[in-house]
Image (tube, rainbow, N blue to C red; front, side):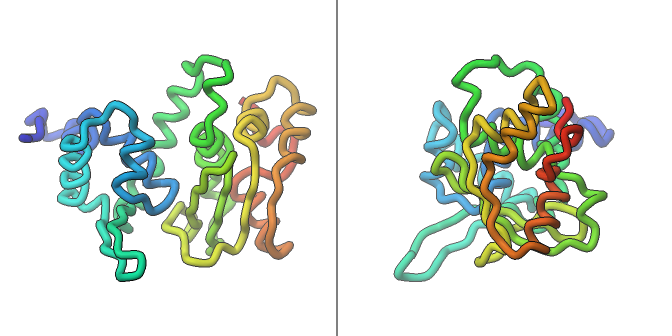
Length: 220
């Protein structure tokens, strides 16, 4: 399948030449949550054709944004991850689009998915300025679905094998902590989020992702 391009020498057109195809950004959205097998991606992208997913992954590899790794036995499986370049370039784009689209969400039970909990409670809340000098890895379990990532050099990065901090939460609480109408509701939702690790690591994560309980931290 030939990729379309705009044939314009401007940064927006050039960026869309790589990111503008259907499904591409949603594949990258999944990989911000950690390493994923092909089957994981397929299950989280209902409606995508198998051959189209393969094409998009190949295009993202060719663009240097995604790495494919063959894990040795006994695991013996292929996993896809963001490359280091991908971690540098992709999260800010996804965050900007999520901020644009969040007001368009329909406020019903269907919005309370683990993915939306991750986007609202983690990706949208990340504060690069508060993360300078921080180097730590995180595991976030939201309603049974796992997301893994790290912070290094003031930006999001690939998780290491052992998390410094583990978070367990319900999607509804993470969404409420970000968007509930009152400060009291936001603070109450944050109290229901469990964060485990050393005090220093937990405090640093709470600051980096605005999980401090500050009533104004999650103001819409």
